[in-house]
Image (cartoon, rainbow, N blue to C red; front, side):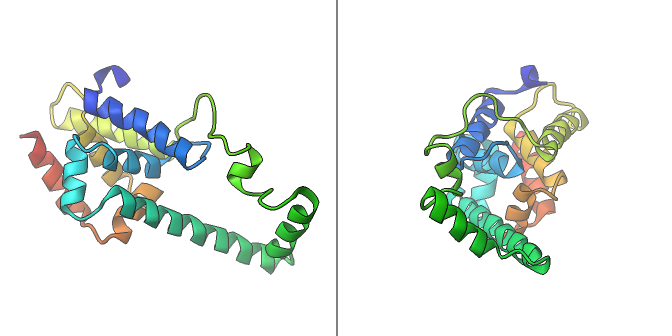
Length: 181
């Protein structure tokens, strides 16, 4: 499939890995794909998203908020079964030093090395990009097709970020298709 990617689509795929590394994530999810599009200013997907007010910085801020909410939810769920997450953190930091549980602290501040795998949803997004290209009778996969795939796979963090910013999925879809003409 990657052999059908345009130069801009390849940039997005490579940048998604960079985004995951910068966030010290051991996977490439739909959120990293979205951030990669927004970090690739010469791409059609970036132009469309920024015209609707979604920037890389805004998306990254929303991602941090969504991930923090997930952490709070984990703490609440653990609390329901009698585990105080804050007490566990305090004991670990007392034994191993401040920041021992921080992502960067576990790896000495280094980003993940080697191959970073795509999540199931990110793979689905790329498969949907291929389907979008075929449906549009294109013999290539452009970054716009990847955005169309992301819009169809709206349940991942990438879709949630778009929704949190109040963007209309159907309007984005029409606009990115218009970019192909």
